[in-house]
Length: 346
Image (cartoon, rainbow, N blue to C red; front, side):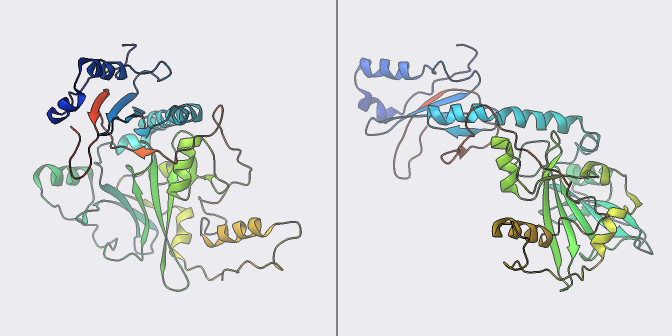
């Protein structure tokens, strides 16, 4: 009906006595009719509790976000989140760098390390995070997946894989929490304390914006709002690591191997500029401490521009009651009984 895919799941046998009359069964049939305002393709689930209370849930077939109120659905539609998700998916599928690594299964990441006699080379490895298996080529990865054979990861002694001292980045093509097509880059930098910083960056292939936290990335997907500290990379993650097994170390990556001796200043009222609020000053200092740049030649230096928020029509979506459902759910309408205790609804 109206392009909506629907299938009514029969109520539990023990609940049939509770339903009783045929009139109540007709009421259930009426509840299976999706409202006119619900877009085609959305899933509507209807649950009836033991006390007879009727609860409805509406799920987007694109994001799998679930809402239980009409107002929440409309706010979500006005936010244009589904459009941004589709744009990211299409842009990711068209990107050459991601096309070349489409074969890499979920759970595998790409590891970038510095090597060579003078540490002037960078090497690419593929690592299965669950087992720590590290391989050097697509053929080796497919051999491991299909036949469980581990090939030798040999660089002729040019690249050390036993420590994090020469680790530059870990790239994930299937990061959790963001739409398909996004790329997560975990950047490694040395500190003067002898520690190693790990800074995450989430890049949207459609807008090219890079976000420093998953929270900011998800906020952009849901509302179109660009956080103040989001930026566009001068050299994108796609271009930076678009090489085969090894290549000359990119100039922008050299600073990651150098210990930063510049001490961080703590924000004080006396140190901030006149006319600058304490909050704004703290943001500036925190930006320096977060290490998003490692020198003027860094490819991750913030662009000196004001980034305006892109908002959907109407109010921004408020998903305080949003439930993330598993992906791959069938596009169908279900009528189920809500039960309490350890029982599960059919």
